[in-house]
Length: 111
Length: 114
Image 1 (spheres, one colour):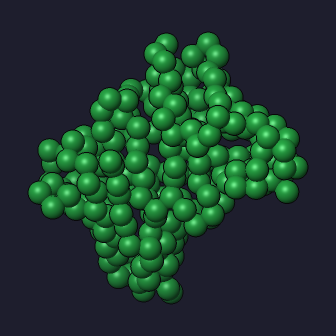
Image 2 (tube, one colour):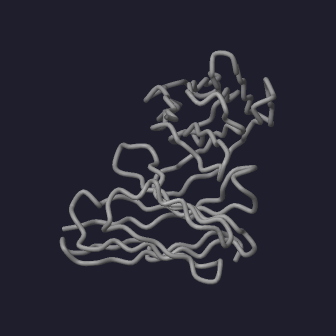
Image 3 (cartoon, one colour):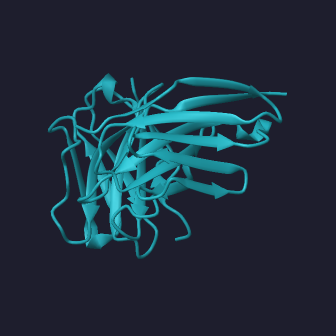
């Protein structure tokens, strides 16, 4: 069945780059997503990538997809304290395209 | 509305009681999803509605859980005879197409069973 795995915790200094990694098992995934959850809040869609793409950049965010290894990463450049949150990787597969989420990576940014 | 609205935002109920959680999706969104997030856990898929099609109930953990979506809009998730392990944040999301471009999530209902 579908499975998405992420490292549980990442700590970086303010101004450094953060890289959050994710692996998934379903080779028929169509879209892969990164969501951000701040304390006490719902999930906010940060970015997504279609499975036929290798890379997507959106301001400070860069998503890299290695479809052969089923590996997805999110790089946050110039990490700020406001980036401290839980980051969830998710994949969707037809039919229905329900999202399967990883357990989330806690990003802690030290000033 | 402008976003996905869930109510109540917090619910404390006694073990054994029934609870109803409500989700009001973004107007025009045809797909609606319920997820559950337990403390320190990822998101667990519960149920999915798409238009007038039969819902995908494959994630419901037991027959105490049910959901309906009336008029293709508002959805209610019902948990009967609640147990302590039902304590979690219940998140609703809606999408304009079948999952493309991601979902928009509500802020969730924090359910505590005492």
